[in-house]
Image (cartoon, rainbow, N blue to C red):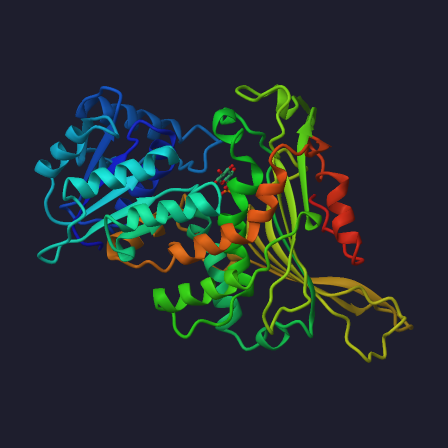
Length: 484
Ligand code: BG6
């Protein structure tokens, strides 16, 4: 069980709270992982009451049992587990920038507290300032005070640095938990186990054996109702220095000295610091035009709500990264992410170099490949060559594959359970440290600067992305894996 604590959620009426935080708390309660003394206080600027908030959340929780578009769709909501959460919910109306909100909280709170900033990024700095000014971040008498900060953490290197400096005036680094929900995915955490708990893969994990690496996070959804957020953000800021760089760390970091949070985070920070700043020649930005998604006509990005009709925001980005360390020097890491693509696929593929010399040279061996399937399929494929049955020594491609579901019982998860639980027990392993965040922004900063005002390349909704992205890999004779 996690220790007793009060969870204060800023943004109680928001989407994140109802779609992800409540289901995650419910799953933790079902698993018996929450202390009886846990309390949840929701803060929002819109008026509500304890009972009103409880009822609204009960309704959305129930709706998930029929809403197949949600990440969370249990067959039924267990009244006991939901009742446990429901009766611990309390609502406070308050403006996120008004000192009274925080003086009121200071009177109501004692002991362990986690402040969860499920709010628009513009409130991160002001809320942390106000928490500090009200004395709410002072840890005393064995009680902790922690702050969970959602993404995006800054919008470029300068703003991320400024935000780090600002929050670290109010508390210690160990009090801030910068969340990246990709790290809550079991298949992402498992990459470390597969790499470092087995002897099989380590010896080939090196530029002598790896030709190139692809990291893909392709989505079929468009920008949906998030135009106002997405317009000034774009695919690069939304996905790359955070989610894709976390995948990059998992696959490329050196073995950490131990599984302690600081050892793991040191190894990640060193990797990100070794990423050479990406030049614009190694970046391709795209924007979707009208097309079809699973047979339905869908509009262009520029025709989406709250999007400028001449918008230059990218909805797709592909980058070629170089890592300046002994393990990876000379191995290109290709990253791509986009909305409205052919299929929803999050995966990492490592293409293995052909053996030299090989008695099979010239016999048509396909390169072998290791493919970590992260989402929605979850497993690992090893694509290899084998002998085709028959009188001649002909080769044919085969795949050795495992799926997590064949070996492990699936526990219900929206990805935030581990992260919330870890924050309660004070394990920061899966959270981002200031140095890693800044190093990630530094790596993409040249592309961010150069793309302001630049036109992205068009790609049809429902395709694999812009032609320029194929050309980016073709320069070195490489190709993206097809998405479907
Ligand atoms: C979010 C981005 O952080 O991650 C979204 O803001 C994106 O634009 C989402 O759709 C993808 O996460 P997942 O877990 O659905 O792959």
